[in-house]
Structure formats: C-alpha cells, structure tokens
Image (tube, rainbow, N blue to C red; front, side):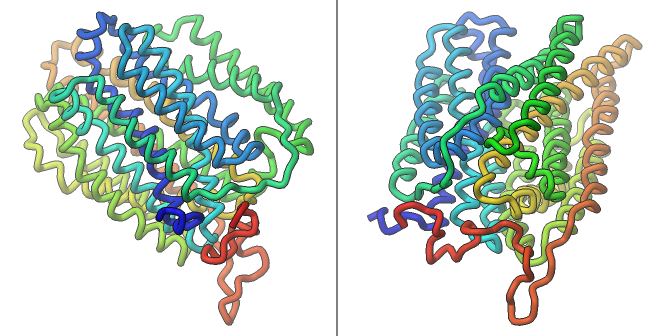
Length: 497
C-alpha cells in the first residue's frame, strides 16, 4: 500500500522528520535522567556528563564528513545507515551495565546521528521544487520544536514511570519505522559523479573539530588550563591546514566546496545559524536553572513552563516557511529575530524570586513566535540556491556550524553563570538574589547575539521578482536544476522514478 507513496515529497518529508526527531530528542532527553543514571550505574558525575557531551561531540565532529559522504555514496544510503547505527546504539544504551559501556554507546549514537542528519536536508531539497522548499523547511523546523519540547517532558515521564533506560529504548520503534519508510518511499538520488573521497581532508577536519569542540565543551570543567588552550591552538592550526588543503582540491570533490560561499545568502545565513544556536542555548540553559533552583520547580514542571514557546514555534513554522516561499525570507527573519530578542528580555525582566509560572506565558509565546518565524526561512533561504550536487556538503557545513554555535553558546553561558554566581555569593547575597543578578548578566549574551543576527539580515539578497506571465527571471531560482522540477512529475535526478 505504501508503494504508491514512493517518491511523494510529503512522504519523504515525514521519513526525514522521524530520523531528525530522534537525533534532536537525544540532545535534550538525557539531561533529566542524570541523577537516576548515577545511582543505577554507580557512575561519577563526570562520567554521567560525558554521557551527555560525548554524543554532541561525535555529532559535531563528523557532520561535514557525513554530509560529503552522502554526496558521494547517495543520501538515501547514508540516511538508512545512520538510522540503523543510531537505533542499534540506542538499544546498547538501554542495556548498558556500566558507565563506560553507556558512554561508548552514546558515542556510536552520535555517529548514527551524524550520518543521517545532513541527508535529511539533502533529500528534502531533492524532492521539493524550489518554490515549495520553504514550506517543507517549516515542517522540518516544527519537528525541531517538537523534539525540544518532548525532550525534558517525555524524559521526565519515562524516568518517573518505567525507568531511565527507556529514554534510549523509546528510539527503537521510531528507528524501525524510519528505516522501513526509507526503503518504501524515499527515492535514490543520482549524483552522476565518480565516487572519490578526500581522506586527508577528513582527517584534518575531524582533528580540528574534535580539538575545538572538546576544548569548548570541557574548558570550564578544567578551569581553562594550559591543556585546554593547547587544544584550541591545535584546533586552529588543523583548521588552517584543512582550509589550505581544501583550496588545492576544489577541482577534485573537496569536503567543503568553496563555491558554496559564492552564494552570499548561504554564507550569511550559515553564520546566522550559529548565532541563533548560541542564543537559544544562552536562553534555555540559565532560565531552566532559574526555574528549578530559584522557583523550586521539578524538571518536568520547568519543561512545561517552556512548552508554550515550542508549541507556538511548531504551529508558526510551516506558515512562516510558506510565506518565505512567496515573499522571500529577509524581512521575515528580521521580524522573527526581533521578536525573539524582545521575548528574551521580557522573560528576564519578569523573573523574580517568587514569580508564578503563568506570568511567563506571554513572554514564552513571543519567543516561540520569534523562533517560528526564524528557523524555516533561515534554513530555506540558506539552501535555496545550492546546486543539488553540493547539497550534502552544504547541509554538512550548515549543521556543523549549528552544532559549534551551540557548543560555543553553552561554554560562554557556563563560564558567565559560574563566574558571576560565585562573585555574587561571595558578597553575602542570598542565593535567589545572586542567581537573578547572574540571570540578568547572562541574558546580555543571547540578546546581543540575536540583535547581531537581525542586523546581518540586511546582507541577505532578496530573490528577483517573477516576470510577467509567472516565469522566473534567469537565475531567480539559483541552481534549482533537477531539484526544482515539479514534484508531481518527479525530478529527473531520481532513480527509478
């Protein structure tokens, strides 16, 4: 019965969304189970934190490589492999008998997530014509909001009812469904190119990203000692070596084709992705701590206070994507980012030592509206003019920058939190007052970053208007090519359609 949906863009989008949902869910769902994992496995706090950070580290390090592998070997094949690896690793996590086994399994989960994540954007681009990608990216962004909402809430329910192991085992039915749908409805994409791969580039990129990501994630824990600064220096040197190596391979399928950055919108919006990721972690991390440590809410209750933001962004995302298809995303992005900055400022101003939870609802609705108007246009406009043959590389770069933005945001906010809170407590201030002063300071980071992102929208190039009669001017769709063919007819680049 499902065979009739083979190649259908919406069926492909559902399949991609299932895989994407799993990977994002596992970025947030684990945090709430840390106390239970420590007790059950006899783990130290440091080991348990590696259960969280190990996944994000492997994911960030391998995204560029996995994106290019999708270009070389086919995105459907890489997506399916990623789903298999991620699902098997989830089973291993759920059956772990000790902290070392759990950390290793989480690393393998990160590998699976890295394999499948870049392929989601590539396959969406392949089956949706250029003029409908904004709508598709809106749904894709809605899934991100759902995963963000579901993580703390679903994790709290699972831990309190059936136990912490089910925060991993819940991925198994989702993974099985995603794998079955992959072979039933997702078409293979022909790249028409030789299957060559830049091994030295992979080694340089992996080394650079590992050094930089590890140092940023663990810097605060090791008090930014000489070893951390040495890793940062090594990462910068390896990154420079990687760029020099890539410059010499631009005619031989590089991992990062510099041609991507000839499109101003891709360059500007990829930087914007990092800024928005920094801002999101810069808001959620300290505000979630405030809700629990100052107001005394449980993890589940804190997640529910933040739920209106995710619900609104989920509802708005598809409409914002559709509007981006019609009018372009430049001014929609500016409006969304401005609303997000206003929402962050409102949350911080409302926060007090005994603020009732419902007082935050208007501000969380505004932040949700802002993010809902940002995620879909940001992704759609960044990828709109990318040639299909470079989609995997573009997606890998875009998602890697997103992850690095999150890591930088977490490191910066963590440093501000600990430094300011310690300074306030040293003056003899009560904990609630000290944390509120800290919250006000840390809010400066996400607000500033969002304002910079909003101003960077001025650099985004608008799309040319359609000529009379509805025909797009030459170059208006960028390099839509086969990916811009009518979806009902099937793109010529799809095998077997």
